[in-house]
Length: 98
Image (cartoon, rainbow, N blue to C red; front, side):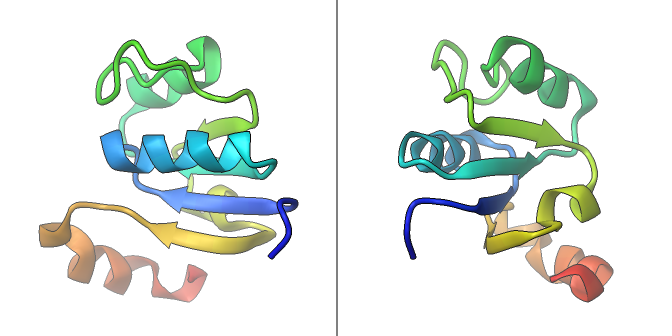
């Protein structure tokens, strides 16, 4: 896959945020889904996940959303990066979008 197009990162913890910014540096437009409204605002307003990855600037190609639908819309690749204990329930609730 060439470094173009949209990638959705579903999970806004430290690992998901790090993956999102790395993909942004490689040229992808990245939409990261996060549950927390304050984390979403921090990523979009400050280009930093001040809750889970403080002090690390995020690439400008990374944007956050609280909407799974918006995150995955037109994505060429979807990365599921949520905590393991929640994967089963999360996928069951969102399977029609994946």
